[in-house]
Length: 120
Image: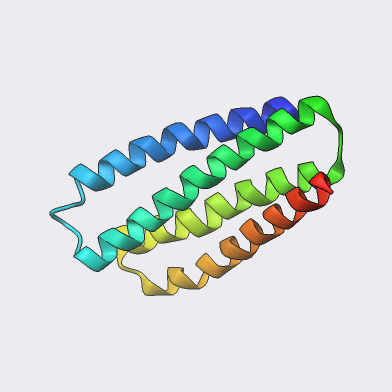
């Protein structure tokens, strides 16, 4: 499981860099300032949680724990739901996609709680 989360973390980090560059260059002229800020929030949270996934993977090399596995899957789900919904919202203009974003936020919170529990 440690390699899985290190792989997903590295993959999400690389994708985050690419998506961030795409937003900064290709979308800057196409999106309003507000929508560009929403897009950048998705990138920022993706990068934070890509790093968190790497930490989870590294911790799993030292100890085995269900809380760490829960944290890793929660961070993964959070990236897909939170950041993914923000990307989809800004690229399509479908505002109902914003209803998915809080579910991703809850997944992030569960991940951080599980990581704190594992540390305790």
